[in-house]
Amino acid sequence: MRALLGLCGNVEVVSEASTAAELIRSVVEQAADLAVVDLNVSDGGGIQATKRIRHEAPFTKVLILSASDSEQDVIAAIQAGASGYLSKSASPAEFRSAIDTLRSGGTYLDAGAAKTIRTALDRPVVSKGRRRPRLGELTEREVEIARLMSEGLTARRIASRLDISDRTVNSHMGNLYRRLGVNNRVDAVRELMRLGITPSPF
Image 1 (spheres, helix red, strand yellow):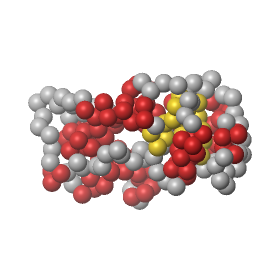
Image 2 (tube, helix red, strand yellow):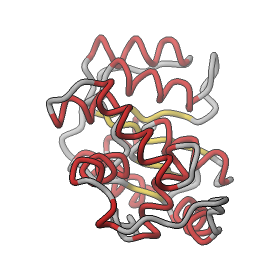
Image 3 (tube, helix red, strand yellow):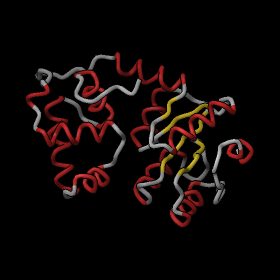
């Protein structure tokens, strides 16, 4: 891993960790710009570590490394706030591309993860007793929050970006869930993409 990072220009490795607890502590203490996280890191796992990192160091980008491209793992990683998802078998060139993309503020999904998300997007969302809302039925603020949600921002970061309270953001997100007929963030983002309210990342 250190050798691969050495191939990326202007990258300084500030810390290494073997457990989730060490990882979270190191990221916070070093104010790291980017954390490369093994999905199966010991002592809690990469998903929980990502959630903690995004909560305690919201400006740190997270790249998940995994041998799995299962829907459960990929969606859980994105929902946790990861900005990238990459196979452990990726080539050095792809690894460098992922690092460069995240450092420039983008999102990176390898081919397996992208296929998994496309499959999830193609699955119909059943909204029992509800019709799908049109863009004009959502308030300007709801659309604004929807687009930030699709970028993977947490409620706290959305509140900071829009200079409003966390409670206000959560209230708007709750309204969005009800309007869309969904119960969680992943299904909400998927439905928003399907409706064209937020852009697909592909």
